[in-house]
Every structure is written in structure tokens, then in C-alpha cells.
Amino acid sequence: MKPVCQQPPSSLARREFLVLGAGAIGFSTRSRQGLAEEPGLPLPGGGSPPFVFGLNTSTIRGQMLSIVEIIDIASRAGYQGMEPWLDELTRYADSGGSLPDLGKRFRDAGITVESVIDFFEWAVDDPGRRAKALESARRSMEIVRQVGGRRIAAPPVGATDVHLDPLRVAERYRELLELGDAFGVVPQVEVWGFSQTLGRLGEAALVAIESGHPKACILPDVYHLHRGGSAFEGVRLLSPAAIHVLHVNDYPATIPRERLTDADRIYPGDGAAPYGELLRNLAAGGFRLMLSLELFNRELWTQDPGAVARTGLEKMKAVVQASIPASG
Image 1 (cartoon, helix red, strand yellow):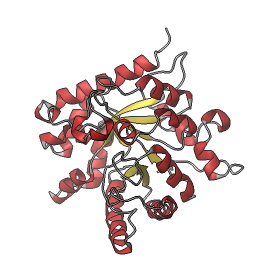
Image 2 (cartoon, one colour):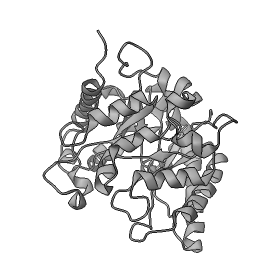
Image 3 (cartoon, helix red, strand yellow):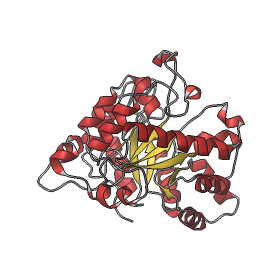
Image 4 (spheres, rainbow, N blue to C red):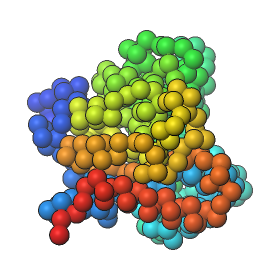
């Protein structure tokens, strides 16, 4: 499996590589050879598409479907990638399913497992809890590896109500990354806007940079960037090596950001998120990433899951098209 966050050129320090834009240092190997070759919406004037479209299974989680059913729904809708939750993979295995066979099912459906959602307390101060978290992460990464997954989410579970020293968190993130090296799975520092630790894009960037690891990267989320008060323009200061998956959704303008909850997420383009600015900056910066539809809307959980998946994909394509119109 190819590395998913490539090591920077030897003439540049890691922190320079992560924060400099693509115009200064060129695209990463992953940007040029990975997602850029997969289908998506084209850039104006031609060139490689900046985005592919993925389904985070939270979007239809309330329908209580099996992972096999979700793969079929995603494939029929036209998704190119998925972000399953780890418990969906373990339920499949616990019921007697073969994880390598499940990986083949993903591939046969034309779907890459760009990321997997999981929760383990890697960042907390308590060494005993961290030790248990690393064991949990080890088991999870083995499962991700077996289905051909590339990355795993690393949110600040257990550290949401306390502000931790970001340099200590960076050391812990490096330990998690080194564990991932053994499985070919990259943990991504996930931004949680309601958290006192890693609640902002800049905090996640600091942790990734100061980890000093060549595969360090960030998992942002449109809802969480707004919820935590991050400036969307901040992505301009990151290189394509920094982000490989972006959770997309939207939020209503009528609710103060501090009062928003996961259940308030709506389809991209149906709310107040500045998609034009965000997507243009990502495309101009040379990013090649998966837009992963991540919703927790209880109303959508009562609807036909195939219709929800199709509508979500249409909404994602519409905001990209409106932000970066194709030429001709």
C-alpha cells in the first residue's frame, strides 16, 4: 500500500512542508498519483479533479443497515469512496464475515475506504487510559488494514472538557502515527469544534506539525470548523499533504454556532457554510481529497437510505459546481 501522506522533499523541514501551499513546493505524490486520477468534477480549463465524493455511513446510520447493504447503496448512488464506522466492520466480522472479502466487496463496487471512524482516548493525560486506547487503536488499525482502508479518525475523545498542552498532544499523536506505520494506516487529527482540545483547525495543525512525523495530517469538518470558530480561510495556509478527507455538511444560519449540535447538520448547500470560498481555496491550493458526506440528521434517518445517499451526492456535486464551474 502506498503511503497516504507523503514525506516532504529533503530540502524542506516537515513543518514547512505542512504549512506551505502547493504553489511554493508542488503537489505531493499522493496528490498527483492518488485521488487526482479518480473521477470527479474537473477544474476550469481542464486538469485533474480536486475532489472525489465519499459517503460517511453516519449519514444513513439511523436506518441500522449492514455494511454490505451500505456498500450497495453507495455504489448505486455513484460514490467513489466511503468512511465506514469501525463498529460496522466489527459487526460484519463478528457475524462470521471475512474482512478481506469485505475489502474485495468495496473494491468490486468501485469504492475506496479512504477513512474509518473510530474513537479511542489517545490524547488524554492519564497514562493508563492512553495505554488502553493504543491497544484499542491497534485492534482497529488491523481491521482497517484488512479491508484495505487507508486512514482512521483520531478525534480528541476523552479530552473535550479540558484544554491539554498541545505539545504533549503532539507527542501522543506521533506515538499513534508510529503505531499506524505498522499497519499502513494513518491516523488523522480530527477537529471537534465543541472540544477544548483540538477544537480549532489551527490547534489540529499545531499538533500535526509538532508531531514531526512525515505522515501527520488533519481531518477537518465543515460543521466543526464553524462550531469551533475556525476561519475557513485558514486552509490556504496548509499544503495538500495536510488534508486527504474533508467532512462535508452544512448548518442553519438561524442557530448560534455555540448552540449547534450534530443533529442540526443539513445537506451541503442548504445552509450558511461558505462553500464557494472554501472549495475554491482548496482547489487553488492543489488539494486532492475526498469530500465525505457526514450527517447525523434524525429526520434523514427516517427516510429511504438510497434516496438520502443520492440526494447527498447531488448536493455535494452542486456546491462544487457552483464554487468551481467547469469551463465550456
